[in-house]
Length: 235
Image (cartoon, rainbow, N blue to C red):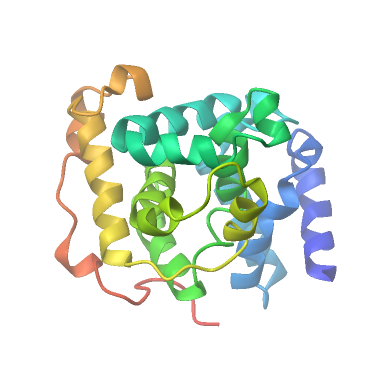
């Protein structure tokens, strides 16, 4: 907690804009756990993540990134309409849904603001971030990873009873053992499908063209589908 307070203070001096985000502790904490031995590396990791993966969020601070949440929500709805409809039914009595937030605030936002650290085991989370960091020039992969996680956990999610926000909230606070090779395959496939318009990219995200589209139309590297982190620091 002392390190967290210290890093949040440094971030506030570094960026007054980000200091207004009430969810900044949730975003920063997973990376502080990884770099807990070195405050400088801890700050640099948080700053790098804020700049590279969440740079567009500043436009909507101090609130959540509603445009990003809507984009992910639409991606899930197109990728798996049945699962999306079930999640809508599960959180249908939530006060957040009554306010029009729906799956965006009840499901997607809790996962995104913690970068999936609440639902993935440590080794799985590190493996995922190995891929995200290796493809740092494609920050949108994090959005695809979130949807990929929901697809990989599909069977569990479909078992949640309808109109039961407490059950959903409890599920989102537990670690889940998912197949990481399957999650990664989903992530890369979704990215490639959007690039080739198979998922209706015009409704999900701005169409990518030229080098950007070509860059993400690639198969999952076979050597990156293992079950252990590749470049994550040892703790």
